[in-house]
Length: 465
Ligand SMILES: [Zn+2]
Image 1 (cartoon, rainbow, N blue to C red):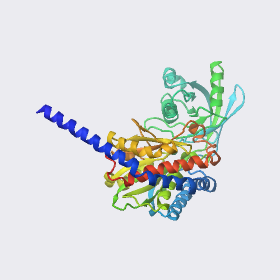
Image 2: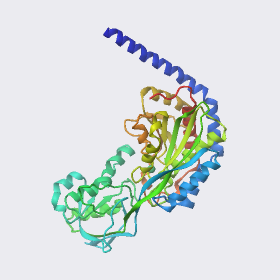
Image 3: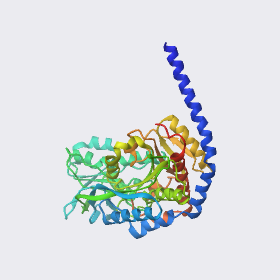
Image 4: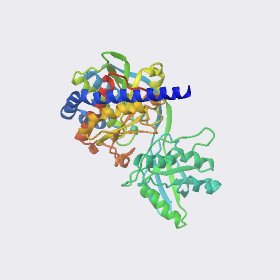
């Protein structure tokens, strides 16, 4: 009996593989012509560059709760309507409203040095006189734990470099722990403020902001990012045994939650309109630079991919839905609002795609889902060979922060992958601005996204879970 079950299971598995392979071959062949049409339209008639220029220069950065974010939402609604999308709407979401205010920091002793800082997103402010205290420099949490109560009444500086010898995403993940949890860990030992080395491998004395956390059972202390140059200066002084006194002033405040919205537009499916392929970016940014890389680029790539399909009057079997999420940066409140509004039909979400790794040359996609679904995504990616964006990899981690509400619910997820070697150089800084963008690279992203999106929406069999 047992052998029969094993045999049947093997047969079903092999049968499945053959069926999948059979469709694999068809997908690459059946969609070759439409893929080249999409490629041509995206590369020749693309408007991603112009859209991103407008979003960056005419609207500017788009912090959660800001007037500019509201302007961007209105702009995106109008742009999607002009692009010929259907069911264009702004879906309400409540978002945190933190404001930076005036901020400054300087080393007072052993010598005067102005520090280039950015308060971390969500930090509390100092009093108007600021905090003047001695700085203790640690390389990591272990060093902090060894010092323990010795940091009481002092400012803790985490000088933990982002490693150059690791893949970029992994290096970021390791270094960003100090930004996220540094204030909590230092406050547990009685520190009065936390400074964090900016999470980047490259610096022209540019501070990088980003989200940080507090914990209910731990006092809230102010936290700010310093530049690599500032962190190394304090490290050198500290190693020499100098007593470092810093004066830190942060004018940050958290205001009541604000009204915001996710922007949604669709191309309704011709045969199975209830089945959805979602494509997304996040419209909010930090309050520095113009959020052109993070994530203005992802937004215009998603918008233009859908416009390209609409422009060619292609109507796939399933519905394509573009979602520009609000407030990714300060806690994913846009994606939580999407989940609250749509969770009853998450089972009809066939796939979710996110573009949130800048606008440089596309490489391919990371994928989260079953092996049988991955085999189909690999086959679709053969259509991306001419764009050199056919590198798809099965991801063990996440493929996009905003779509994690969907992938956590079992929806297959894809993250657009870009050449990210310089992504973190300007990430969350005043240098995240439009002139870093390249017209051709943006268009290649749009073509890559549009082909993947269209085939997923139109292929005979829905991507399996
Ligand atoms: Zn982002």
